[in-house]
Amino acid sequence: MPDRPIRVVVTVGSTRAGRFAPIVASWFVKRASARPDLVVDVVDLAETRLPDALTGFGSLPPEAVTALLPRLAAADAFVVVTPEYNHSYPAPIKTLIDWFFAEWQAKPVGFVSYGGHSGGLRAVEHLRQVFAEVHAVGIRDTVSFHGARDQFDADGVPVDTEGATRVAEVMLDQLTWWALALREAKEETPLHHRLNRRPAPGPAPLRRAGRLRRPARVQPSLSATLALARAWPASLGSDRGAGRGNTAAVPDPCGRRPRWCNRRHEHRSRRTPPTSVSGCGHGARPTPTR
Ligand SMILES: Cc1cc2nc3c(=O)[nH]c(=O)nc-3n(C[C@H](O)[C@H](O)[C@H](O)COP(=O)(O)O)c2cc1C
Image (tube, rainbow, N blue to C red):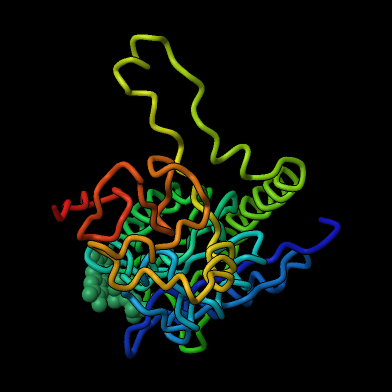
C-alpha cells in the first residue's frame, strides 16, 4: 500500500446523446473505487464541455478549462473510457488533451475501450501515440468490450463479470505501479530537467548539418501560462490584433530566444520583420508583411 492513495482521474470520452458510455464507465469506476489504494475522480466530458476552439497563445483560457485544471494537475494517473468512432477516438478527448500539457506529463494513462468488432482497440492505439507526445505513459493492458451493448446486462454488469474484473485489476495494478514509480521519480528529480532537456551534442558533421541543433521543446504548464497572463500588465495590451506595427503588444513571457519558444505563447525576434500571423513558427510559417 502506498503511504498516500493514488489519485486517478477517470475520463468519460463520449459526449453523444444516447451514449452507452455511462454503463461502461460506471462499472469501471465502481471497480476502481473499491481499491483501497485509489481515490477516483470522474471527469465526464459531456459535463465539462470544453470549447473545441483553443485560445490564442498567452491568452487566458476559458473558465471550463481553468476549472478542470486543478483536478488534472492533482491526478497521479488517468484512465480514459473511450468508444471507437471511425477507427479512432471521439473528438472531445483530443480537445481535452490539447487544452493541457504539463498536467499529463510523466503520468500513466490506462484505457477502457468499447465499440463494435474491434472493441475500441483502434481508438486506444491512436490515443497511445497522442499521449506519448505529452510525455504520458500508456499502460500496456487494456480493458476492452467488443460488441459492447451485448456485453452488459440490464443492471450494467458485464455478462462475463469475472473475466472483465480480472482484466480491470490487471490494468489497475499496472497503472498504480507506474503512478507510484513516477510520483517518486518526480519528487526526486524535477520534471523540467529531465523531460525538457536539450539533446546531447552529436558528432561534428551532424551538428554542422544542423540536424541536432534543434532543442527539445520547452512548454510551460497551463497553470504557469495562466499566472503569467494574469500578471501581464494591461497597459502592454494583449496579442489581439498582433501584426504589422503592433508587435510590442505581444507578450513574451519566458524571455527565451524565438527558436527556443513553445506553443503556449508568442515570441518576437528583434531581427525579423513583423508578421501578419501572430505565431512562433510552429505549424504554418508566418508571412512577412513587408
Ligand atoms: C460516429 C460513429 C462511428 C463509429 N465507428 C465505429 C468504428 O469505426 N468501429 C467500431 O467498432 N464501432 C464504431 N462505432 C460504434 C461505437 O463504437 C458504439 O456504438 C459505441 O457504443 C459508441 O459509444 P457511445 O454510445 O458511448 O458514444 C461508431 C459509432 C459512431 C457514433
